Length: 180
Image: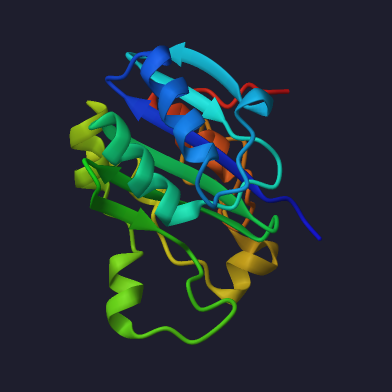
């Protein structure tokens, strides 16, 4: 089994409010252990590396945004195969990205569109230009997945097709991975 990772960015939120929401979520069905989460405040928000074995994905992003009434982006690495995110505010989906929604099963065209990622939506909330992140939000072809991807931007460390491209994406949003 590969890596399953969840990192949550709470925008315009205090660490106290983020911790309270995480603690409440632990009582739900997310396999979340608040004492094993790592927190850091940066860029006007809170960045939280969730505990191992957490299994929240989209329902957790929705839940945390409802509890905090703030924009919440849950970024994830799925089985070290790909990265993606779910972006919610007040329990309402703002945007989602998955470069390979059909990796495990066929999905309808509407789902592909929903999971395509919209740079303009994300950029508006993070106070950046859409061009800063647009090149990350591409579907991964078989060639990209097999290692023929290129970095989205010249200063990136990771290429499309590498699940760790999530680190470069987070940096463009103004949040560091930096949990090593």
